[in-house]
Amino acid sequence: MRKFKEAIIEKSLLASALVTILVTLGIILVLSFEAVNFFREVPIIDFLTDTQWTPLFSDKHFGILPLLSGTLLTSFIAIAFAVPVGLSISIYISEYAPKSFRRTIKPALELLAAVPTVVYGFFALTVVTPFLQTFIPGLSGFNSLSAGLVMGIMIIPFVSSLSEDALHAVPNSLREAAYGMGSTKLQNSFRVLVPAASSGIIVSIILAISRAIGETMIVAIAAGQQPRLTFDPTVPVETITTYIVQVSLGDVQHGSLEYRTIFAAGITLFIFTFLLNTISYRIRKKFQEKYE
Amino acid sequence: MSKKEKGIVIDKSIKRKHKLETKGVKVFYDDFMAIKGIDMTIKANKVTAFIGPSGCGKSTFLRLFNRMNDYVDGFRLEGEVRIDGENIYKKKINVEQLRKQVGMVFQKPNPFPKSIFENVAYGLRIQGINDKRYLSEKVEDSLKQVALWDEVKDDLNKSAIALSGGQQQRLCIARTLAVEPSIILMDEPTSALDPLSTAKIEELIYELKEKYSIVIVTHNMQQAGRISDYTAFFYLGELIEYDRTKKLFTNPEKQQTENYITGRFG
Image (cartoon, rainbow over the protein chains, first blue to last red):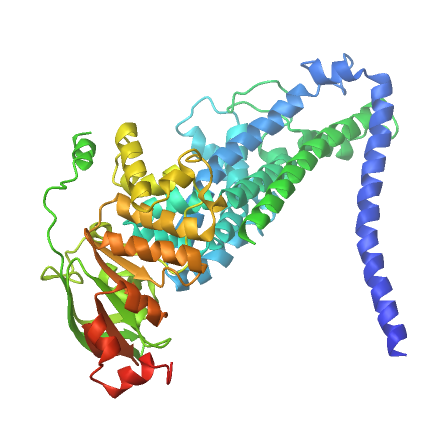
Protein backbone atom coordinates (compact mmCIF):
# COMPACT_ATOMS: atom_id res chain seq x y z
CA MET A 1 0.00 0.00 0.00
CA ARG A 2 2.79 2.34 0.93
CA LYS A 3 4.66 1.49 -2.24
CA PHE A 4 1.57 2.23 -4.28
CA LYS A 5 1.23 5.63 -2.64
CA GLU A 6 4.87 6.40 -3.36
CA ALA A 7 4.37 5.44 -6.98
CA ILE A 8 1.40 7.75 -7.35
CA ILE A 9 3.26 10.65 -5.80
CA GLU A 10 6.26 10.00 -8.01
CA LYS A 11 4.14 9.88 -11.15
CA SER A 12 2.28 13.06 -10.29
CA LEU A 13 5.56 14.88 -9.67
CA LEU A 14 6.81 13.66 -13.01
CA ALA A 15 3.58 14.80 -14.64
CA SER A 16 3.90 18.32 -13.29
CA ALA A 17 7.48 18.48 -14.52
CA LEU A 18 6.33 17.29 -17.93
CA VAL A 19 3.58 19.91 -18.07
CA THR A 20 6.09 22.75 -17.94
CA ILE A 21 8.20 21.15 -20.65
CA LEU A 22 5.17 20.53 -22.84
CA VAL A 23 3.93 24.08 -22.41
CA THR A 24 7.33 25.44 -23.40
CA LEU A 25 7.45 23.16 -26.42
CA GLY A 26 3.92 24.20 -27.34
CA ILE A 27 4.82 27.87 -27.20
CA ILE A 28 7.86 27.33 -29.37
CA LEU A 29 5.81 25.29 -31.85
CA VAL A 30 3.04 27.86 -32.18
CA LEU A 31 5.55 30.68 -32.46
CA SER A 32 7.55 28.89 -35.15
CA PHE A 33 4.49 27.74 -37.07
CA GLU A 34 2.94 31.20 -37.30
CA ALA A 35 6.32 32.80 -37.93
CA VAL A 36 7.00 30.43 -40.82
CA ASN A 37 3.63 31.39 -42.30
CA PHE A 38 4.58 35.02 -41.92
CA PHE A 39 7.92 34.56 -43.64
CA ARG A 40 6.19 32.86 -46.58
CA GLU A 41 4.64 36.20 -47.38
CA VAL A 42 7.36 38.57 -46.21
CA PRO A 43 10.93 37.79 -47.28
CA ILE A 44 13.19 37.42 -44.28
CA ILE A 45 15.67 39.86 -45.85
CA ASP A 46 13.01 42.60 -45.83
CA PHE A 47 12.17 41.72 -42.24
CA LEU A 48 15.77 42.15 -41.17
CA THR A 49 16.82 45.12 -43.30
CA ASP A 50 13.75 47.32 -43.91
CA THR A 51 13.94 50.40 -41.73
CA GLN A 52 10.20 50.89 -41.39
CA TRP A 53 7.59 48.94 -39.49
CA THR A 54 4.10 49.84 -40.72
CA PRO A 55 2.09 46.61 -40.99
CA LEU A 56 -1.12 48.33 -39.96
CA PHE A 57 -0.92 51.09 -42.58
CA SER A 58 -1.89 50.83 -46.21
CA ASP A 59 1.74 51.23 -47.25
CA LYS A 60 2.99 48.15 -45.45
CA HIS A 61 6.60 47.74 -44.36
CA PHE A 62 7.80 44.84 -42.25
CA GLY A 63 11.25 45.86 -41.02
CA ILE A 64 11.86 44.71 -37.44
CA LEU A 65 14.74 47.18 -36.94
CA PRO A 66 12.62 50.07 -35.57
CA LEU A 67 11.05 47.78 -32.95
CA LEU A 68 14.41 46.21 -32.18
CA SER A 69 16.03 49.61 -31.73
CA GLY A 70 13.22 50.61 -29.36
CA THR A 71 13.76 47.46 -27.31
CA LEU A 72 17.54 47.80 -27.28
CA LEU A 73 17.44 51.50 -26.47
CA THR A 74 15.10 51.16 -23.47
CA SER A 75 17.00 48.08 -22.27
CA PHE A 76 20.33 49.83 -22.65
CA ILE A 77 19.16 52.79 -20.57
CA ALA A 78 17.78 50.42 -17.93
CA ILE A 79 21.01 48.42 -17.75
CA ALA A 80 23.23 51.50 -17.79
CA PHE A 81 21.32 52.66 -14.72
CA ALA A 82 20.77 49.35 -12.91
CA VAL A 83 24.24 47.81 -13.20
CA PRO A 84 26.31 50.52 -11.47
CA VAL A 85 23.64 51.08 -8.82
CA GLY A 86 22.95 47.38 -8.29
CA LEU A 87 26.63 46.50 -8.12
CA SER A 88 27.35 49.28 -5.63
CA ILE A 89 24.49 48.07 -3.47
CA SER A 90 25.74 44.49 -3.59
CA ILE A 91 29.27 45.50 -2.61
CA TYR A 92 27.95 47.66 0.18
CA ILE A 93 25.69 44.95 1.56
CA SER A 94 28.25 42.18 1.32
CA GLU A 95 31.37 44.02 2.53
CA TYR A 96 30.44 47.17 4.39
CA ALA A 97 27.01 46.89 5.96
CA PRO A 98 26.59 45.50 9.47
CA LYS A 99 24.91 42.11 9.51
CA SER A 100 21.67 43.37 11.00
CA PHE A 101 21.35 45.93 8.21
CA ARG A 102 21.97 43.21 5.65
CA ARG A 103 19.07 41.23 7.05
CA THR A 104 16.64 44.11 6.60
CA ILE A 105 17.89 45.70 3.40
CA LYS A 106 17.94 42.54 1.28
CA PRO A 107 14.24 41.71 1.55
CA ALA A 108 13.43 45.43 1.23
CA LEU A 109 15.33 45.59 -2.04
CA GLU A 110 13.70 42.48 -3.35
CA LEU A 111 10.39 44.21 -2.74
CA LEU A 112 11.27 46.45 -5.67
CA ALA A 113 10.87 43.43 -7.91
CA ALA A 114 7.48 42.72 -6.39
CA VAL A 115 5.91 46.04 -7.37
CA PRO A 116 3.48 45.41 -10.25
CA THR A 117 5.05 46.65 -13.46
CA VAL A 118 1.92 48.56 -14.38
CA VAL A 119 2.55 50.72 -11.32
CA TYR A 120 6.08 51.34 -12.52
CA GLY A 121 4.71 52.29 -15.92
CA PHE A 122 2.37 54.80 -14.39
CA PHE A 123 5.14 56.12 -12.21
CA ALA A 124 7.34 56.65 -15.26
CA LEU A 125 4.62 58.42 -17.20
CA THR A 126 3.18 60.63 -14.47
CA VAL A 127 6.15 61.31 -12.19
CA VAL A 128 9.49 60.67 -13.86
CA THR A 129 8.71 62.16 -17.27
CA PRO A 130 7.32 65.47 -15.89
CA PHE A 131 10.28 65.65 -13.53
CA LEU A 132 12.80 65.08 -16.32
CA GLN A 133 10.99 67.62 -18.48
CA THR A 134 11.87 70.35 -16.00
CA PHE A 135 15.49 70.16 -17.09
CA ILE A 136 15.27 68.43 -20.50
CA PRO A 137 12.88 70.80 -22.28
CA GLY A 138 12.71 68.81 -25.53
CA LEU A 139 11.54 65.62 -23.82
CA SER A 140 8.37 64.15 -25.28
CA GLY A 141 5.53 62.92 -23.08
CA PHE A 142 6.37 59.41 -24.21
CA ASN A 143 10.08 58.67 -24.36
CA SER A 144 12.57 55.87 -23.87
CA LEU A 145 14.57 57.76 -21.26
CA SER A 146 12.10 57.70 -18.40
CA ALA A 147 10.77 54.28 -19.37
CA GLY A 148 14.34 52.98 -19.38
CA LEU A 149 15.22 54.60 -16.07
CA VAL A 150 12.17 53.23 -14.30
CA MET A 151 12.79 49.81 -15.81
CA GLY A 152 16.31 50.18 -14.41
CA ILE A 153 14.85 50.72 -10.94
CA MET A 154 12.76 47.61 -11.38
CA ILE A 155 15.75 45.40 -12.29
CA ILE A 156 18.11 46.72 -9.61
CA PRO A 157 17.26 43.83 -7.28
CA PHE A 158 18.06 41.30 -10.02
CA VAL A 159 21.57 42.72 -10.23
CA SER A 160 22.13 43.49 -6.56
CA SER A 161 20.72 40.31 -5.09
CA LEU A 162 22.48 37.86 -7.38
CA SER A 163 25.75 39.82 -7.33
CA GLU A 164 25.61 39.94 -3.56
CA ASP A 165 25.17 36.17 -3.48
CA ALA A 166 28.20 35.82 -5.73
CA LEU A 167 30.32 38.14 -3.58
CA HIS A 168 29.17 36.40 -0.45
CA ALA A 169 30.24 33.05 -1.92
CA VAL A 170 33.85 34.15 -2.35
CA PRO A 171 35.82 32.16 0.24
CA ASN A 172 36.76 34.11 3.35
CA SER A 173 40.37 33.04 2.91
CA LEU A 174 40.63 35.46 -0.02
CA ARG A 175 39.37 38.33 2.11
CA GLU A 176 41.92 37.43 4.77
CA ALA A 177 44.66 37.28 2.16
CA ALA A 178 43.74 40.70 0.82
CA TYR A 179 43.45 42.31 4.25
CA GLY A 180 46.63 40.58 5.35
CA MET A 181 48.47 42.30 2.49
CA GLY A 182 47.30 45.68 3.76
CA SER A 183 44.35 46.21 1.43
CA THR A 184 41.73 48.74 2.34
CA LYS A 185 38.10 47.62 2.13
CA LEU A 186 37.74 49.36 -1.19
CA GLN A 187 40.82 47.69 -2.66
CA ASN A 188 39.72 44.35 -1.31
CA SER A 189 36.27 44.79 -2.92
CA PHE A 190 37.36 45.97 -6.35
CA ARG A 191 40.69 44.23 -6.84
CA VAL A 192 39.98 40.86 -5.28
CA LEU A 193 36.32 40.15 -4.57
CA VAL A 194 34.66 41.57 -7.69
CA PRO A 195 37.12 39.79 -10.03
CA ALA A 196 36.71 36.58 -8.02
CA ALA A 197 32.90 36.85 -8.22
CA SER A 198 32.89 38.10 -11.80
CA SER A 199 31.15 35.11 -13.31
CA GLY A 200 28.25 35.40 -10.87
CA ILE A 201 28.07 39.13 -11.44
CA ILE A 202 28.02 38.67 -15.21
CA VAL A 203 25.22 36.14 -14.87
CA SER A 204 23.22 38.62 -12.82
CA ILE A 205 23.70 41.29 -15.48
CA ILE A 206 22.68 38.94 -18.29
CA LEU A 207 19.54 37.93 -16.44
CA ALA A 208 18.76 41.61 -15.87
CA ILE A 209 19.21 42.33 -19.60
CA SER A 210 16.96 39.46 -20.45
CA ARG A 211 14.35 40.80 -18.01
CA ALA A 212 14.61 44.28 -19.52
CA ILE A 213 14.23 43.04 -23.08
CA GLY A 214 11.12 41.09 -22.19
CA GLU A 215 9.57 43.82 -20.03
CA THR A 216 6.27 45.02 -21.46
CA MET A 217 4.09 47.14 -19.22
CA ILE A 218 6.51 49.94 -18.38
CA VAL A 219 7.55 50.55 -21.98
CA ALA A 220 4.01 50.13 -23.29
CA ILE A 221 2.79 52.86 -20.95
CA ALA A 222 5.71 55.27 -20.89
CA ALA A 223 7.79 54.82 -24.05
CA GLY A 224 5.08 55.33 -26.65
CA GLN A 225 3.80 53.41 -29.64
CA GLN A 226 5.69 54.87 -32.57
CA PRO A 227 8.06 52.43 -34.26
CA ARG A 228 11.03 54.54 -35.12
CA LEU A 229 14.62 53.63 -35.96
CA THR A 230 16.41 55.98 -33.59
CA PHE A 231 18.76 56.09 -30.67
CA ASP A 232 17.44 59.40 -29.42
CA PRO A 233 16.17 58.76 -25.87
CA THR A 234 13.90 61.82 -25.80
CA VAL A 235 11.39 60.81 -28.49
CA PRO A 236 8.61 58.22 -28.46
CA VAL A 237 9.59 54.74 -29.66
CA GLU A 238 7.94 51.35 -29.73
CA THR A 239 9.45 48.15 -28.41
CA ILE A 240 8.78 44.63 -29.68
CA THR A 241 6.75 43.85 -26.59
CA THR A 242 4.67 47.02 -26.90
CA TYR A 243 3.86 46.19 -30.49
CA ILE A 244 2.67 42.72 -29.51
CA VAL A 245 0.38 44.22 -26.87
CA GLN A 246 -0.91 46.82 -29.29
CA VAL A 247 -1.86 44.26 -31.92
CA SER A 248 -3.19 41.70 -29.47
CA LEU A 249 -5.55 44.25 -27.96
CA GLY A 250 -6.49 45.77 -31.30
CA ASP A 251 -9.04 44.64 -33.86
CA VAL A 252 -6.71 42.89 -36.27
CA GLN A 253 -8.34 39.96 -37.97
CA HIS A 254 -7.29 36.57 -36.69
CA GLY A 255 -5.12 34.68 -39.21
CA SER A 256 -4.30 37.72 -41.32
CA LEU A 257 -0.79 38.83 -42.21
CA GLU A 258 -1.07 41.70 -39.74
CA TYR A 259 -1.98 39.18 -37.08
CA ARG A 260 1.05 37.03 -37.91
CA THR A 261 3.44 39.93 -37.46
CA ILE A 262 3.19 39.51 -33.70
CA PHE A 263 4.54 35.98 -34.01
CA ALA A 264 7.47 37.17 -36.09
CA ALA A 265 8.11 39.85 -33.48
CA GLY A 266 7.61 37.31 -30.71
CA ILE A 267 10.11 34.86 -32.12
CA THR A 268 12.68 37.63 -32.46
CA LEU A 269 12.22 38.41 -28.80
CA PHE A 270 12.35 34.74 -27.90
CA ILE A 271 15.63 34.22 -29.77
CA PHE A 272 17.21 37.11 -27.87
CA THR A 273 16.17 35.99 -24.42
CA PHE A 274 16.94 32.36 -25.24
CA LEU A 275 20.48 33.29 -26.27
CA LEU A 276 21.00 35.36 -23.14
CA ASN A 277 19.70 32.59 -20.90
CA THR A 278 21.96 30.06 -22.59
CA ILE A 279 25.00 32.27 -22.11
CA SER A 280 24.19 32.80 -18.45
CA TYR A 281 23.64 29.07 -17.96
CA ARG A 282 27.06 28.34 -19.47
CA ILE A 283 28.76 30.92 -17.29
CA ARG A 284 27.00 29.64 -14.21
CA LYS A 285 28.17 26.10 -14.90
CA LYS A 286 31.75 27.25 -15.26
CA PHE A 287 31.41 29.26 -12.04
CA GLN A 288 30.21 26.25 -10.08
CA GLU A 289 33.23 24.25 -11.16
CA LYS A 290 35.54 26.94 -9.88
CA TYR A 291 34.47 26.72 -6.26
CA GLU A 292 34.02 22.99 -5.95
CA MET B 1 51.79 61.35 -9.37
CA SER B 2 54.51 62.44 -7.01
CA LYS B 3 52.98 60.28 -4.32
CA LYS B 4 53.13 57.20 -6.55
CA GLU B 5 56.74 57.77 -7.47
CA LYS B 6 57.61 58.16 -3.86
CA GLY B 7 56.16 54.72 -3.18
CA ILE B 8 58.73 53.10 -5.44
CA VAL B 9 61.63 54.14 -3.26
CA ILE B 10 61.24 51.76 -0.37
CA ASP B 11 64.09 52.37 2.00
CA LYS B 12 66.11 49.19 2.27
CA SER B 13 69.08 50.67 4.05
CA ILE B 14 67.56 50.80 7.50
CA LYS B 15 66.63 47.32 8.67
CA ARG B 16 65.54 48.05 12.17
CA LYS B 17 65.09 45.27 14.63
CA HIS B 18 61.43 44.78 15.34
CA LYS B 19 60.38 43.63 18.72
CA LEU B 20 56.89 42.40 19.55
CA GLU B 21 55.54 42.87 23.03
CA THR B 22 52.29 42.24 24.80
CA LYS B 23 51.31 43.65 28.19
CA GLY B 24 48.45 42.08 30.12
CA VAL B 25 46.68 41.02 26.95
CA LYS B 26 43.20 39.57 27.33
CA VAL B 27 41.05 38.68 24.36
CA PHE B 28 37.30 38.21 24.56
CA TYR B 29 34.90 36.83 22.01
CA ASP B 30 31.68 38.21 23.44
CA ASP B 31 31.78 36.78 26.97
CA PHE B 32 34.30 34.04 26.29
CA MET B 33 37.83 34.84 27.36
CA ALA B 34 40.17 33.30 24.79
CA ILE B 35 43.41 34.86 26.05
CA LYS B 36 43.71 35.26 29.79
CA GLY B 37 46.34 37.89 30.35
CA ILE B 38 49.65 37.35 28.59
CA ASP B 39 52.87 39.32 28.95
CA MET B 40 55.39 38.35 26.35
CA THR B 41 58.35 39.76 24.43
CA ILE B 42 59.23 38.24 21.09
CA LYS B 43 62.79 38.73 19.90
CA ALA B 44 63.65 40.31 16.56
CA ASN B 45 65.19 38.30 13.72
CA LYS B 46 64.47 35.01 15.38
CA VAL B 47 61.96 32.30 14.69
CA THR B 48 59.48 31.93 17.52
CA ALA B 49 57.13 28.96 17.53
CA PHE B 50 53.74 28.88 19.27
CA ILE B 51 52.68 25.39 20.27
CA GLY B 52 49.78 24.02 22.24
CA PRO B 53 46.63 21.92 21.83
CA SER B 54 43.76 23.06 19.60
CA GLY B 55 41.74 25.90 21.08
CA CYS B 56 44.55 27.05 23.37
CA GLY B 57 44.48 30.53 21.84
CA LYS B 58 47.79 30.43 19.97
CA SER B 59 46.26 31.43 16.62
CA THR B 60 44.20 34.16 18.25
CA PHE B 61 47.31 35.43 19.94
CA LEU B 62 49.28 35.37 16.66
CA ARG B 63 46.58 37.30 14.84
CA LEU B 64 46.77 40.09 17.38
CA PHE B 65 50.01 41.30 15.84
CA ASN B 66 48.48 42.28 12.50
CA ARG B 67 44.98 42.94 13.85
CA MET B 68 43.36 40.17 11.85
CA ASN B 69 41.04 39.47 14.78
CA ASP B 70 39.37 42.80 14.12
CA TYR B 71 37.05 41.06 11.64
CA VAL B 72 35.87 38.44 14.11
CA ASP B 73 32.43 39.14 15.58
CA GLY B 74 32.44 40.00 19.24
CA PHE B 75 36.22 40.48 19.40
CA ARG B 76 37.45 42.67 22.24
CA LEU B 77 40.95 43.31 23.53
CA GLU B 78 42.28 44.40 26.89
CA GLY B 79 45.90 45.28 27.50
CA GLU B 80 48.48 46.43 24.99
CA VAL B 81 50.18 44.94 21.96
CA ARG B 82 53.32 46.84 20.99
CA ILE B 83 55.64 46.75 18.05
CA ASP B 84 58.84 48.68 18.76
CA GLY B 85 57.16 50.21 21.76
CA GLU B 86 54.16 51.49 19.84
CA ASN B 87 50.72 50.28 20.82
CA ILE B 88 49.21 48.98 17.57
CA TYR B 89 45.68 49.09 18.95
CA LYS B 90 45.62 52.79 19.65
CA LYS B 91 43.16 54.88 17.66
CA LYS B 92 45.61 56.68 15.41
CA ILE B 93 47.20 53.55 14.01
CA ASN B 94 46.90 52.95 10.24
CA VAL B 95 45.89 49.30 10.10
CA GLU B 96 46.70 48.93 6.39
CA GLN B 97 50.19 50.30 6.99
CA LEU B 98 50.64 47.96 9.95
CA ARG B 99 49.75 44.94 7.82
CA LYS B 100 52.32 45.89 5.22
CA GLN B 101 54.90 45.80 7.96
CA VAL B 102 53.55 42.62 9.54
CA GLY B 103 52.95 40.08 6.79
CA MET B 104 50.91 36.93 7.24
CA VAL B 105 50.90 33.45 5.76
CA PHE B 106 47.78 31.39 6.35
CA GLN B 107 47.03 27.77 7.08
CA LYS B 108 45.52 26.99 3.71
CA PRO B 109 47.30 28.44 0.70
CA ASN B 110 45.07 31.30 -0.47
CA PRO B 111 46.40 32.75 -3.72
CA PHE B 112 44.17 35.23 -5.49
CA PRO B 113 42.43 33.93 -8.61
CA LYS B 114 44.86 35.95 -10.70
CA SER B 115 48.06 35.20 -12.58
CA ILE B 116 51.22 34.23 -10.70
CA PHE B 117 52.72 37.60 -11.56
CA GLU B 118 49.71 39.57 -10.34
CA ASN B 119 49.60 37.60 -7.10
CA VAL B 120 53.10 38.67 -6.18
CA ALA B 121 52.64 42.19 -7.54
CA TYR B 122 49.35 42.69 -5.65
CA GLY B 123 50.81 44.23 -2.50
CA LEU B 124 52.82 46.73 -4.54
CA ARG B 125 49.93 47.58 -6.84
CA ILE B 126 47.66 48.49 -3.94
CA GLN B 127 50.35 50.90 -2.82
CA GLY B 128 49.95 52.59 -6.18
CA ILE B 129 53.13 51.19 -7.73
CA ASN B 130 52.56 50.39 -11.40
CA ASP B 131 56.03 50.80 -12.86
CA LYS B 132 56.43 47.67 -14.99
CA ARG B 133 60.17 47.28 -14.66
CA TYR B 134 60.12 47.74 -10.93
CA LEU B 135 57.25 45.27 -10.54
CA SER B 136 59.00 42.64 -12.68
CA GLU B 137 62.14 43.01 -10.64
CA LYS B 138 60.29 42.67 -7.37
CA VAL B 139 58.29 39.68 -8.58
CA GLU B 140 61.41 37.89 -9.76
CA ASP B 141 63.26 38.76 -6.59
CA SER B 142 60.44 37.55 -4.33
CA LEU B 143 59.91 34.34 -6.26
CA LYS B 144 63.64 33.63 -6.08
CA GLN B 145 63.60 34.12 -2.33
CA VAL B 146 61.05 31.34 -1.98
CA ALA B 147 62.83 29.14 -4.56
CA LEU B 148 59.83 29.18 -6.86
CA TRP B 149 61.33 31.25 -9.69
CA ASP B 150 62.85 28.35 -11.64
CA GLU B 151 59.58 26.42 -11.48
CA VAL B 152 57.33 29.21 -12.71
CA LYS B 153 59.44 31.72 -14.62
CA ASP B 154 57.93 30.68 -17.97
CA ASP B 155 54.36 30.63 -16.64
CA LEU B 156 54.11 33.97 -14.88
CA ASN B 157 50.88 34.80 -16.71
CA LYS B 158 49.20 31.52 -15.86
CA SER B 159 46.64 31.34 -13.08
CA ALA B 160 48.05 30.75 -9.62
CA ILE B 161 45.18 28.35 -8.92
CA ALA B 162 46.82 25.81 -11.26
CA LEU B 163 49.90 25.47 -9.03
CA SER B 164 50.30 22.59 -6.57
CA GLY B 165 49.48 23.20 -2.90
CA GLY B 166 53.14 23.50 -1.92
CA GLN B 167 53.85 25.88 -4.78
CA GLN B 168 50.78 27.94 -3.86
CA GLN B 169 51.99 28.28 -0.30
CA ARG B 170 55.44 29.39 -1.45
CA LEU B 171 53.71 31.84 -3.77
CA CYS B 172 51.76 33.20 -0.81
CA ILE B 173 55.02 33.67 1.08
CA ALA B 174 56.55 35.39 -1.97
CA ARG B 175 53.51 37.65 -2.13
CA THR B 176 54.09 38.61 1.50
CA LEU B 177 57.83 39.19 0.97
CA ALA B 178 57.24 41.45 -2.02
CA VAL B 179 56.00 44.29 0.18
CA GLU B 180 59.10 43.94 2.39
CA PRO B 181 57.56 43.41 5.79
CA SER B 182 59.79 43.24 8.82
CA ILE B 183 57.74 40.64 10.67
CA ILE B 184 56.10 37.56 9.19
CA LEU B 185 53.33 35.72 11.00
CA MET B 186 52.67 32.15 9.94
CA ASP B 187 49.54 30.31 11.02
CA GLU B 188 50.29 26.59 10.57
CA PRO B 189 51.70 27.21 7.12
CA THR B 190 52.50 23.59 6.37
CA SER B 191 49.51 21.79 7.86
CA ALA B 192 47.82 21.42 4.45
CA LEU B 193 51.00 20.32 2.65
CA ASP B 194 52.77 17.06 1.88
CA PRO B 195 56.10 16.25 3.63
CA LEU B 196 58.26 17.31 0.69
CA SER B 197 56.60 20.72 0.38
CA THR B 198 56.76 21.04 4.15
CA ALA B 199 60.51 20.45 4.09
CA LYS B 200 60.92 23.16 1.44
CA ILE B 201 58.96 25.68 3.48
CA GLU B 202 60.89 24.86 6.63
CA GLU B 203 64.13 25.41 4.79
CA LEU B 204 62.78 28.69 3.55
CA ILE B 205 61.83 29.83 7.04
CA TYR B 206 65.34 29.07 8.19
CA GLU B 207 66.75 31.33 5.47
CA LEU B 208 64.23 34.09 5.99
CA LYS B 209 65.06 34.71 9.64
CA GLU B 210 68.22 36.55 8.59
CA LYS B 211 66.04 39.40 7.40
CA TYR B 212 62.72 38.94 9.15
CA SER B 213 61.31 38.23 12.56
CA ILE B 214 59.14 35.16 12.19
CA VAL B 215 56.39 33.93 14.46
CA ILE B 216 54.92 30.57 13.54
CA VAL B 217 52.01 28.65 14.96
CA THR B 218 52.43 24.93 14.53
CA HIS B 219 50.76 21.74 15.60
CA ASN B 220 53.82 19.79 14.75
CA MET B 221 56.28 19.68 17.63
CA GLN B 222 59.09 18.24 15.55
CA GLN B 223 58.66 21.20 13.29
CA ALA B 224 58.88 23.62 16.17
CA GLY B 225 62.02 21.83 17.32
CA ARG B 226 63.61 21.93 13.86
CA ILE B 227 63.03 25.51 12.84
CA SER B 228 62.52 27.73 15.85
CA ASP B 229 64.90 29.53 18.15
CA TYR B 230 62.30 30.15 20.82
CA THR B 231 59.16 28.23 21.65
CA ALA B 232 56.09 29.30 23.58
CA PHE B 233 53.68 26.75 24.99
CA PHE B 234 50.05 27.89 25.33
CA TYR B 235 47.33 26.12 27.22
CA LEU B 236 43.73 27.25 27.76
CA GLY B 237 44.45 30.86 26.86
CA GLU B 238 47.52 31.15 29.02
CA LEU B 239 51.20 31.27 28.23
CA ILE B 240 52.54 28.37 30.26
CA GLU B 241 56.17 28.41 29.29
CA TYR B 242 58.36 30.41 26.94
CA ASP B 243 62.03 29.69 26.48
CA ARG B 244 64.78 28.80 24.07
CA THR B 245 63.51 25.93 21.96
CA LYS B 246 66.32 23.62 23.04
CA LYS B 247 65.70 24.28 26.70
CA LEU B 248 61.92 23.96 26.44
CA PHE B 249 62.08 20.65 24.62
CA THR B 250 64.83 19.04 26.69
CA ASN B 251 64.33 20.50 30.11
CA PRO B 252 60.94 22.19 30.55
CA GLU B 253 60.27 23.98 33.82
CA LYS B 254 56.56 23.19 34.04
CA GLN B 255 54.91 19.84 34.36
CA GLN B 256 52.17 20.79 31.85
CA THR B 257 54.76 21.57 29.19
CA GLU B 258 56.47 18.28 29.75
CA ASN B 259 53.18 16.41 29.53
CA TYR B 260 52.38 18.10 26.26
CA ILE B 261 55.72 17.69 24.52
CA THR B 262 56.03 14.10 25.57
CA GLY B 263 52.61 13.44 24.10
CA ARG B 264 50.72 12.71 27.29
CA PHE B 265 47.89 14.99 26.21
CA GLY B 266 46.94 17.33 23.40
